[in-house]
Image (cartoon, rainbow, N blue to C red; front, side, top):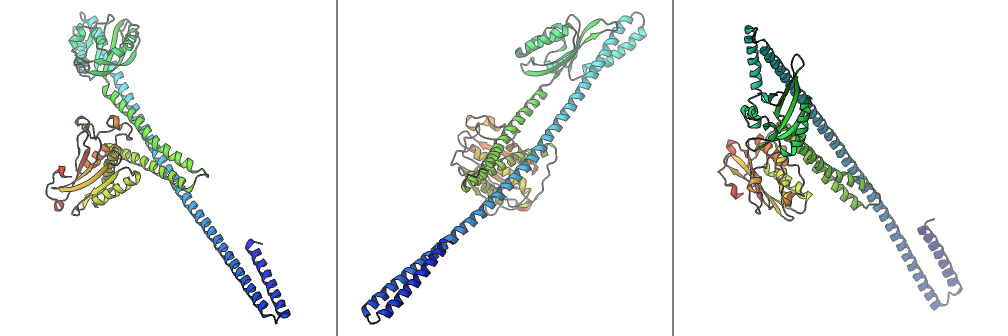
Amino acid sequence: MTTVGKKRSITQKHDGKVSSALTTRGLVRRDDGDKTRRLENSRRALLNILDDLRADREREESARKARLNILEDFSEERLRLEETRRALLNILDDFEVEKVKVEKANTMLEQKSEELRRARDDLEMMVRERTRDLQAANLDLTNEIAERIKAEQSLRESELRYRTVADNTYDFEFWTNPEGGYVYASPSCQQVYGYTQADFVLDPALRRRVVHAEDLAAFDRHLADERKQLPGAAEYRILRRDGTVRWIGHNCRPVYDANGRYRGVRGSNRDITDRKRADQIKDEFIGMVSHELKTPLTVVMGALETSRDTRLKAEQVRELLDDAIYGAETLASIVENLLELSRSQANRLTLLTEQADVGAIARKVAHDLEGRSAAHHLTVDFPGDIPAVVVDQIRVERVIFNLAENAMKYSPSGGEIGITARCRGSELLICVSDQGPGIAADDQKKLFQSFEQLDMTSRRSMQGVGLGLKVCRTLVEAHGGKIWVESEPGKGSKFFFTLPLGREQARNPVDPAGL
């Protein structure tokens, strides 16, 4: 029996005893008026006490029902949080799928590079074989010159054909005799090294002197292998005549005549500077992307893992889930920029244009970014007479988002980022301004290029793989517009871009300085 039931039973028994006592006393002393009134007053007092007990019992019942309602509300909130967690896990699964796609794309790129290398090796082998044939023809011509004039003429014609091929190759082809002197040096030596054929023929040691000091030891080891009549390959830097540094890919092999006598070394030097730079850019890009993807991914995984702790309060779980959502949005932004750049480089960038309110797009971007950071204030100023523009809404939103996010990264806490627009002739001029440290004129030339992130002390802690502005330029130019920056160190920056208007949308020219 519950506490309330026990109280009710006691109260009922007490009421019965009081009533019985009052009735008995009334029968015995019916004539005693004063005592009867006192007993009546006592009875009423007891009845009042009973009423108070009933009221207390009703309040306790109400409190019990309120506690049950609170427990039901808590259960519903817990179910909603579980649904949110499952949604975030689905987002992570989607990201893993995109990550696998990127890895597949990298694998395909590596396969194409391997195919290109094989094709290059085949070409080099063909050149070596043809040069060897040319050498054999020249030796045969020397041995038979006195006996067969007609054959000599035929061999001379053959030599001319092969020499034409060798003289017009892009690589620096050469043949040195067993003493190290040049039997042949192709004219392309001047294009690769900056020195003429005569420079090498008259000064065979020139080949070693132009090697970069840091690569000289490795080059000497390669020369030692050449003297041992061993084929080999090497990559090293040289100093051209004009002082510039270039990377050389060198291949060589010993040459023997028909009688097996050693005739020197046949070699080929190719300028591989562009390939080295491409490899460096690729390695840096992979490293930067890996780092930038790892940072928000760590936030997402850490927040979700911690949120599973049942000892956490609901508010703490919500904060962790907010962190996970922010990390997932950062990942999505990086992946979207990568996809846009990939589409552009593969000539698969297609615009889905329609009439759009660019002002509404800008306000949406400002709302989304302010939800990420309370340390900055974004303002949007689009006049009411701005007409609708025929654009790809998603791509224009990406441009404004990248520019505004970039402004937030480099603006001080409490700084204001402005998004404004004006009609200028036959185009809509949009400006994203910030109160950051500004950009020097030399650094401005590096903007809007892939993987460029200015190396400034105050910016080294900022995230970004340098894709955002490159994607902006690609998308703006795809719409037929232009993008540029106006900035001075210490005075903030203004990024402008234009979108074409239809003839009926054109307005009077506007000075960009007024935005």
